[in-house]
Amino acid sequence: MAEVHIRPLTEPALLGYKALRDAMLASHPEAFTSDADTERLRDIASYRSRLAGNGLTLFTLLALDEGRVVGALTCEREPRRKVQHIAHLVGMMVADTHRGRGIGRALLQAALERLRALPALAQVTLSVTAGNRAATGLYESAGFTRYGSLPDAIRLPDGRRLDKDLMLLRLQG
Image (tube, rainbow, N blue to C red; front, side, top):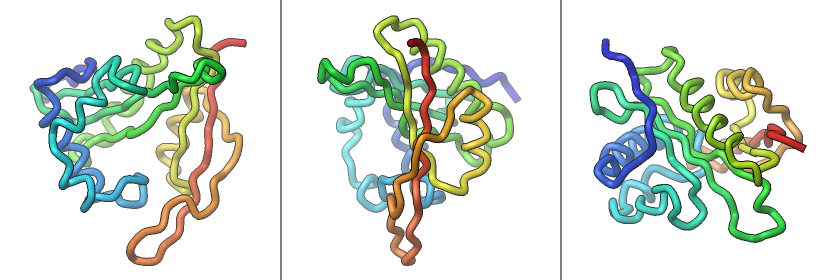
């Protein structure tokens, strides 16, 4: 199999990004706060907000295998001056067909390299569904620590209620 490449999301890749996102939301509802039925109806143009420099998005990185989008990770930062030193990682996903190949780690490392290059950033946060040991282990291996929990963060149609663990990585003082 060809090597997977990490690069920023561009307009031509929006369709592939949406296809991956729709598939991941449908097959892993416990991992995301967005729901598959609502997101499937979103127009492709609405994903332009995930392009670098649009609104809150600093960047979205893609993992590509022979041109096919097989992974993604978005980094956001609020425009409010008092909290501009904090970035947020959201929407980490790797296609089921490509799990266990280090793609999530590669996306996370590439994102952290970009964040460390921005001197105004001091820390980055993320949330992960409590009990998702693989994701939590990945984040901890990159230096993230758990600083809290949001109980009852996700309510699934089947009645399950899931907590989110809140994690933080300090980039600089």
